[in-house]
Image (cartoon, rainbow, N blue to C red; front, side):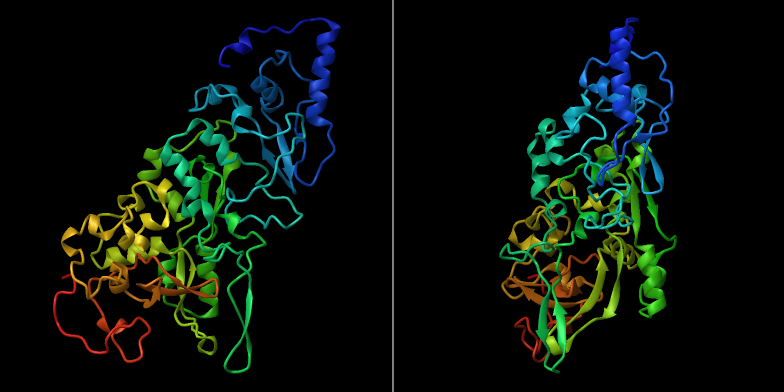
Length: 429
């Protein structure tokens, strides 16, 4: 594709002018539709331009016009692709349609609004209004070339499948449940995810969510840790804004640049856009036997910062220090499934702390070493417990302490089967 622009000269005959006129009209004279709006800000008189030959040149006949944009709501979103910058990018020799598969090449295209790029600022996809997310490339296009096993594993990972959110453990769709409490009141447990809120962040088939070189912006500046333990209404609203980040893909359309593995593993910027949140204090509902601390979103970044303040992992502050291959972030490859042979385990570094005896063989490291949460049983294993999505959930805590509180488990009437009394000794044996 690189040198073809210089090989084809404009043929000065009426037929060529008719072809140019037809192609140009296709770019600018389409009727707006709910899913795509035709490009605007196109110069009224095209300059002498080669007649498109390859698929990409046909795309660039319109998308190569510097001021081209599409209206999204009241906003003009640029869709200009700089041919020189694109040719110098990682995919410079790839035809447009090799990535943008299943797209109608004739404007205004059939560009679907898929959420996940303009992360928590976007609307639900059940809303008829338009948002910046007018199109994104599905992962199957990426996997056609990036066909190594580790890339294919991503489609089965927790990032892609939205683990424990859209489906129950038996695979049935999650739905809100109304429960009559012991006090006679109706309570709602679980949540209905048919509205597809999750896809605003978990774009389950899109590698570009992390790899596209988007800008990342925090909705409200500030450190949520400054309000971590304030549970009043006003601070809750402030914390909510501080934990909202947007990824704006449109600023990178011209160059089509991608983040490399080196970029993603040398900074927490991309991870932070989603793994940020806070605890909401005691959210227990005793009338329906829900016990625990409420967790908003995924506050592992804040938890890691608190751990570092206690001298834990202060020199391992990158997510990828432990999670070395995020393409394989499945249950068994996290501390959550450490005792099941997962790849990311505390004992990978703390080998001397491996449980060798029978006494605590069902207790995860984070169950003891979490600094704030209580514990509960999950499939026979003891984990930290949080209230999230109106359910008790095993929480992959990064808020760690060296000080162990045995009374988390060892008290009268506990639900994890621990004896009420304990004797001193090395629990790792």
